[in-house]
Image 1: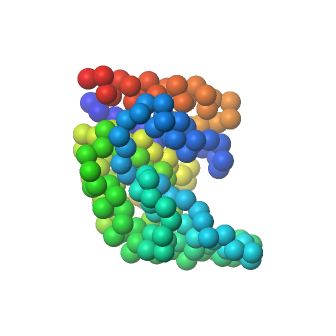
Image 2: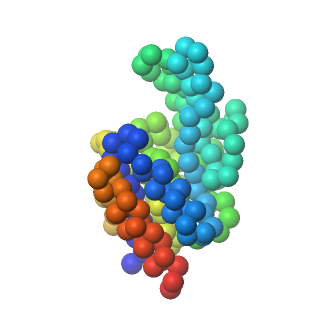
Length: 173
């Protein structure tokens, strides 16, 4: 049975870095999405973008705005619902990236359905999932094709090798 791997762990431990190294070292064609911060302001506020793997931030891709100094955020589930399913359905990749799934998409039901449908499919998924409990994240973790690996500073080199091995085995068939 085809499996998908999701990495989880503390913030800034290297989960996304592992994904980028796997893409670089494997040379395979990837699809999917990544979330990135940008538009940093002097007051500490910033935006969060939902992007394809080779896309640059654009105003129509803002999924959240973070207010400075821990004052919260505004989330735009409609952007998750319009952009996310398209990114997951674009092209015919050898590997689908989901970097990352978290709490911001809790009201984006079309996006959630697209993620779960992708997990039911045959294309392997490599992703990052926040280490928190929400109904959606719990459903992803409980999916029969999903394996979750905890990344720590101590094991991240080993996890990189484990994920590279997974990717290589998936494409040697």
